[in-house]
Image (cartoon, rainbow, N blue to C red; front, top):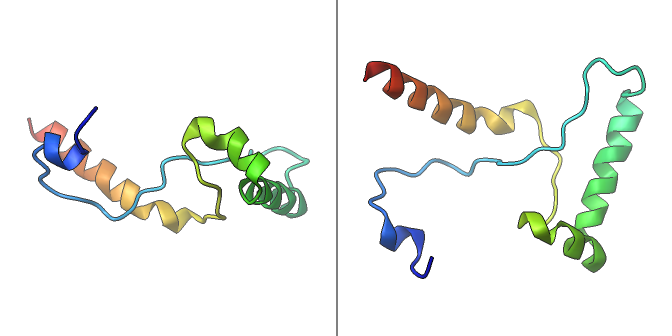
Length: 90
């Protein structure tokens, strides 16, 4: 791709930022308690805060990680609902 996406497409709308990746954990694992989840979250955030860690995650085009909560994905859910509605109307 040589042009920007804005030059090569007819954009009809733009959503708010959408999280596109997650590091998810099991809700049923007996070892996945709140302390473990907090330590895992901190470890990934720390990886993204070092030059060595950034080099490792560069393959994913990530700049780092932030803690998230379910509501951070509300825009994605709304976009998916809109797509499903448009697909079912056809």
